[in-house]
Image (tube, rainbow, N blue to C red; front, top):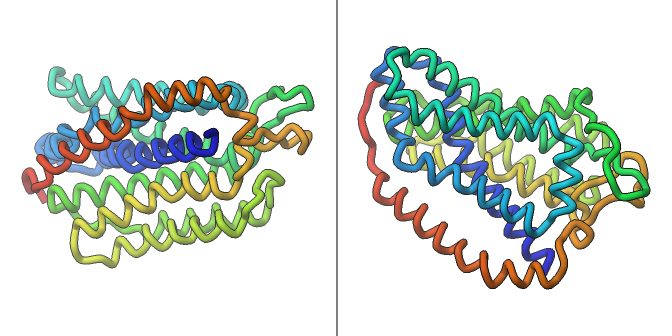
Length: 314
C-alpha cells in the first residue's frame, strides 16, 4: 500500500511540474514581452487553467502530509529555506496574476509575477538537489541541521529546473499564441551538466543510478528535441515530458529510499519507513483516491474547452 501511494504522490508532483511549471515559465517570460498587450495575451492564455494547474500542488502536499508524514517532517526541516521560498513564491504568483488587472501600475505586478515564477522554479529545483544529495539524518531518525545548500551541484540542479520551466512556458506560448519557438539547447546542456555532477559526486542514497540516468537523458533529449519539432502542439508535448521526467528520475534513482542520510547510512528513510500506518493508508484509499479521477477529468475538460489559440501578438 505504501508503494502505491508513493506512486500516486509521484504522479501528483509530476502533474504539478508540468502544469504548474507552465505557469512559472510564462510568468518568467513576461519581462521579455513588449507592451501591455503582449503580456495580457500571455496571461490570458494561461488564465482559464491557472488555478486548476496550481491545485496539483495542493493535492501533492496533502498526500505527502497524510500518507508520508515522516518524509514531510524531515525533508521540510532539512530544506526549510527552499520550502519557505516555494510557499512564498506560490502565494506571490497567485496574488500577482489575480491582482494585476485591478492595479494601475501593472509593471510592478509584472515584476512580482516574474520574480515569483523564478523563485518557485528555483525552489523546486533546490528540493530536487537536496533529495538526491541526502540530508543530515542521525541514528535517532531525525534531521539535525540544514541540507547542504552550499553544494554547487544542488544549485546546478535548480538552474536546470529553471531553464526547463522557461522552455516549457515558451512552448506553451508558441502553441497558443504563435510566439517564437523556444530553444531548448541551453536547458538541455545545463541538465546534462547537472547529471554529470551527480555522477561525479555519486551520493550514497542513489541506489539505482542507471534508471535515474536513463530518465535524465530522456529529459535532456526531450527538451533539446522540442526545438526541432515543427508542430507547436508537439513542441509543447515534448517540453511537458521534459518537465515531468525529473520527478520520475529522482524517485527511481533513490527507490526504495526516499530520504538518504549523509551521516549514517542506517538512518536512511525508506518508502515503508516514511509512510503512515496501514489503517491511515486504507482510509486515504477510501476517502481521497476516488477524488483523483474527478480532478483529472475536470482538468482535461478545461484543457479541451480552451484548446484553441486565443490571439496572436507576435
